[in-house]
Image 1 (cartoon, rainbow, N blue to C red):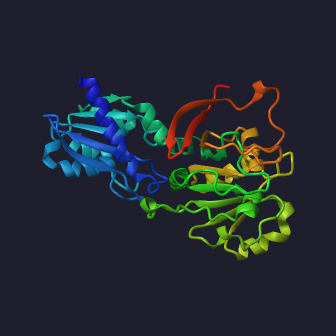
Image 2 (tube, rainbow, N blue to C red):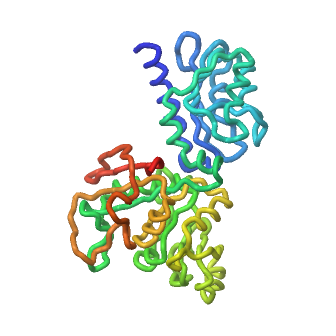
Image 3 (cartoon, helix red, strand yellow):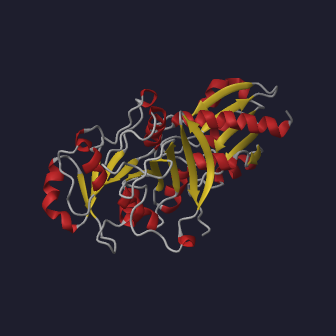
Length: 372
């Protein structure tokens, strides 16, 4: 491999280290770091594993490298910080260790950093290179970037459907359309999320727990469970009220008679302005979640709630699990309800990012095209 290929491969390894923080580090970003000595050997590895106050990825890699870091190269997926937060500045640790070159994938969008870390390193005589696998690094921390720059969560809409776009049969049965492999992958998405959002219809039909249930993510934080219920349809005996973690019921004044029961079940009740249809405003939900430090939100449905978020352009990414089956039925539920966009050119435009096989199913990932 030539020099650029080597840099790319080493940064890919650093990104793999960063992913070890999946489900553990919010509201901080996932970060990975490698130290390569002057002879090209890897002498230090580190990642941020949370919680707040834990050593940053760069510091962990430097500790492992010890004196071998002097004159070496640091590969880091995110720009080292240059401010005092819950830990000292990472730039000071890098400079004190005698690192000669720092290669970063992406700059830190946090206004407290945002280029200042790289500037500090350059001022100290450290050679700095940026942009190696930068797009991959930014996608990994899309929720962190969205929240620190706008105060709003990054929303992934998760869908499990048949090849013809049905989420249930005409009799209402929906378990299970997709395979155990796909469902396990969906639990990994839940571990990524700070909050999981569902509508009243989904709770009444499926009585979901909305928790992360996967052995390799057993230590992940449980996301906040958010129920969007404008009219007070969800009973306080629903399964999601009896799980680890917290529950928020996003509602309107129409549900006044149900609020005391929700509070008695341990939920936080947030009254939000209605949208033009009388439902809960998606913008209001995201505003309230942003105030609570929710960076990544996973929208799990159902069809009516999904349509309200899609209609209001409140979705940033779509992850759809497609099962190799056709269900049919004019009355069978589809992935999104509502009146739909018309004409066809007014639809929510997406950009396909990747398609993977998950067991017998397909996993399709697409980003919302923000230029349209």
